[in-house]
Image (cartoon, rainbow, N blue to C red; front, side, top):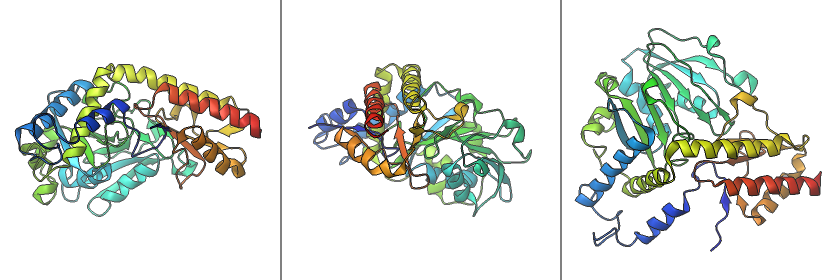
Length: 361
């Protein structure tokens, strides 16, 4: 077996060590007599997995005690739809800062149930930058302010999310969670779909300040009530147990590798290497994002001659570099370099890009 360097934006590459451990435990989890996905989620084996996963995640992210951790089925989009139901009163507005495709998606999810106000948007500039804080039109009576920390499609990332005053700040960290240290106490809540830095698709994590859970919110079924989910240890219904287990293995792997500080250093080196390959190409490759808003996780780039796109992708695959095709919204190329992508993979991509340019420049 020869595994390629996988630059997929999500579902994304998982650490090989995690996949090998899951492979070894696939038929029987420890001495349970069955795999983890076959046993009861209320049995001692899975409860131990769930509780250890939360404990490890709290350690990895330095989650304060006054924040609850809820594991939810689905992904970030599901969380987005439930935010106003849990944290906004009927008729109350919320402010959204839109910096890319997923910010627009978050806005779309809540439009049927809340007055979602666009406090700032960079759409007019093609989502190539982040609106300055001075231009944000925030409402003092808003239920919360929502931002997307990193935009996977447009390759735009907040390097320092500004303060929004006394209104709770809620952020989608799906594609950058655990990539560097984060002061969670600055937020009312953060959430993330797992399939980029935390594990496989099908499960998400919500980290929410406990006092926000006391809000009455709007009429909703118990299954959509985060207070009820927390009381049931995220098991109000049968959870995606395999995904939860894999998330736990991934978090443990990150701790063993040195935690978020170590990954922050690695991610800075990887991003610098890839952007240098683009910027140093003399225009053969280009990235259109403002330099101080460039993502460390998702790097979109374009070839100077789009007729070379198919050859680039085909030859990259032959070189063991896969999933580099850009999103249909933008076209071009995109390299997603999350925590599980080793520096050797980014170096291999940079070397291939240089070689491709020499042969086609």
